[in-house]
Length: 89
Image: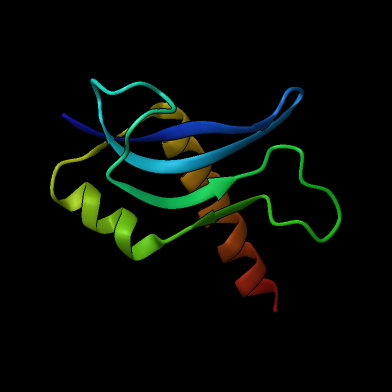
């Protein structure tokens, strides 16, 4: 099964996650098929906290890839934040 999940990077106590498409049997930080974006949980100031290639995400979901609950939550959270920012402008 193909999953869309987070792969950890960064240093000790400074996490950084890549949003990747991977085989569910591969290791968390192992091989992946495609990198879709990133999530930086400790972003401050002008740093970007979450970035995702929406087109590729939609493609992978359409062909049957299953996003993990954490990725689904992040996508939903930042889509709603983006729509609120667009309506406020």
